[in-house]
Every structure is written in structure tokens, then in C-alpha cells.
Amino acid sequence: MTRGKALQTMGAIAAGIPFIESALHNINSSETGTIHNAMNISDDTVLKKAVSELEYLTPADKFFVQRRGNPVLTEIPEEKLAAIGLTRDTWKLEISADPASNSEIGNPMTSEHGNPFTWNDLMKLSETKAVRYLHVLSCTNAKKLYGMGLWEGVPLRDVLWKTGPKQNIRRIYYYGYHNDDASQIFYGSVHISRVLEEAPGELPIILCYKLNGKYISHANGGPVRLFVPGYYSNRSVKWLQRIMFTNSFHANDTYAEGNNDVEGPLKTTAKFIKVPEKVKTGESFAVTGLAQIGPSGLKKVQYWMKPADQSLPENDPYLANGKWQDADILPPPENWGSDLPGGILPSVIQFDPKTGKPLTWPLTNAIVHWAALCKAGSAGEYEIRCRTIDLNGIAQPMPRPFGRSGTNMIETVRLTAGL
Image 1 (cartoon, rainbow, N blue to C red):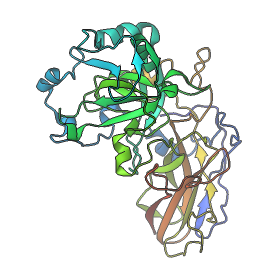
Image 2 (image 1 turned 60 degrees about the vertical axis):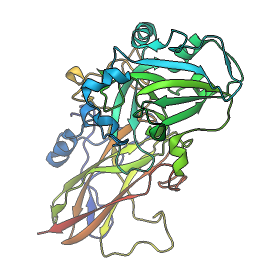
Image 3 (image 1 turned 180 degrees about the horizontal axis):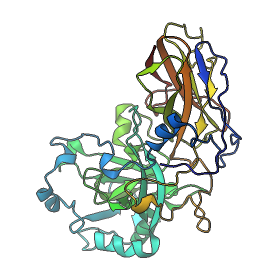
């Protein structure tokens, strides 16, 4: 996709690392999360080709889908979906108080009471309450992102208020369909305050029914999944069917039972998209990647290429003393993705409705693309790494380098340079 005509041309500069020359550096890198400038790719064939292959939104049918359940939930035959309430015509959401706590609500919305919340109810509410936002979907422990999407739905609070919540409510517990087998139930929870209000700039929890402008497929959690922004995908339970108000202060999340941190927000982290396996000595080659942006924001993306047989710095487990170079953070794309007609983005929460431009760039809880141009000065095997620097000036994998709370270890890729 094109990246705009307002970018300024740069010549190559020496990086000062043995065997490596960099042809890019950050221009006017933002300290506060405002829109970054970047290199002009129009005059560089190598960069132009590499950047043209990037697509901001992951096509809905290309999202990585986790295989879970026995039988596998994502592979339930279409003809069986209606019988289990997983079509738009048959979907319903049961909302009640937790019988194991003393939470009180005035109007339970259940089949027993004859008033479950239905697809038609959701569509009626969407006429005045629908919201859209850009958000990455990633797993706590997986290295690869599941996808970058445009999510549409109705704020959950607008539905929960219909039940007349009264008192003794601290959390909500929510459940998705899982083969009508108690041993396979997948569920999550969130504090009630996070449902009912957001801090300025924070995104609402939604009953989500569209991904990239299309009704969510069964594989991606349709007809309705809960989407909890700011967290990893395990909080956004698929095939949503039941919600309970509870006075318990405990998280009930299935994922927590596997020694995972389910309360920690997304981490700011860099990943590669494309690094060539083989390059010619002395010829420029492009490297592209993405950065996932957590609440600490993004100041820089950096890369470090070194001969594979060159030792890493001693007593430096997080490679803080590597010879890192600044990559270029790309601006908002002109074409947001092949799922959208003409690649045009509809109105979203994170954009100014008057100008149609993002309120800040990069967007928190989303991704941004980055690129760098390198040369290998001699033949041999090389390692190339990437990392982020957040708006607090802290380099990946800090400040949260612990496992089971979000993957953010520094990624390493090998390449070969030859004549």
C-alpha cells in the first residue's frame, strides 16, 4: 500500500557497525505518541516493493484461529450451529446474577424469564449505540499475532443496564459455548468498573458482531463474541452465550488456571514481518516488521544486525548494550486493507470525526509498521534482532520481561550474505 507523498527523501548513512551499513534513520521521531514522519520510499525500489507488500488490517479469513475443544469448536458443521444457538437467528445472551453470591439485579434477562437478549435486540441497539475501533488480537504466550482488526459492536454497559443492576456487584463472569461439556467451558471475567466506564482515550468493552466490516464468522467467534480491549485474546471470549453479575472479587478466567497473568495489559513489542533468507554482499535489502503497542506507548523501533559468530554482550540478558539502530515507523496507510471497500476506513473511535485522521499515531492497542534498509559488508551468516522503546524510554523486553504475562522477548532471525 502507498504511504503518502509528504515523506522526505534521505540518502544512505553509515551505521558504524562492522559489516553493516544502514540507509535509514528516524526523522523527527515522536516523543509523545503523535504522528511520526518517515523515509520517502518513492525513490528507493527496494523499500518501495517491501512496503507495498504490507497490509494494515488482517483479512478476516486470514486471522489465526486457535484449535480448541473436542470436537474442535471452530470446525462445528454449519448445519449444527442453529441448534446450539450459534447463528444470528438463534443466538441469545442469558444475563443473570451469580447464584453463589449476593449480587442483586432487578430484571434478569434469561430464557427462564422469557426475555433473553437476542440478535434482534442487539441489532436494534446498534442503530444508535454501535462503535468501531482498531485493535490487535494476540495471545499471551504465542509469538505470532492472531491478527489486526477493525472491531464493531455495542458497549456492553448499554446491555447490562437493561437488567437493572442494584448492589453487591464487583465483577461480571462471562461464558462462551463449548460443546455443552462442563470440562471444556471457556470463560473469563472483568471488574464491573471496567465495563461501566472508561478513562479518557480508553476503549469500551463491546458485544462484538463485526470484524473488518463483515459479520464475524463462526471461526472468529461469531455470531457474537465479547471484546475486552487492552488485553490479550483470552479475555475476549468467543461464542458468547452467558453473563453473570457477581460479588466475588476473584477472577474466574480459564486461562488463569494455566498459570497465566490474565490481568496484565498488552505489552509493547516489535516483531519481524519479512527478512530475506539470503542477500548479496554489498547490496541493499529491506527488512519490515510491526510493533504491537501497549499502554506504555511507542517511542522507537530499533534493529541490530551482527555476524552470527560474534558474541553477544556479556552479563546483558536483555541485550541493552547491543549496537541498536533506529528503524523508521511508518505513518497511517492510505489503504487500510483489502477487506474494506476501496481500503477506506469507516469512522472509528480513535480518529477525529472532522478530519478523518487518527487522534494520535501510533495507536495504543493496535500495530504500526516499520521498515529498515541494510547492507551486509562481507559474506557470512548474520543475526538480526528488533525491539521497541516505549514512551517511558524503556527498551523491550522490559519493564515486564516475565513469561506467561505476554510474549515480548526480543525476536531473532538469521540470514545469509553471499557474493
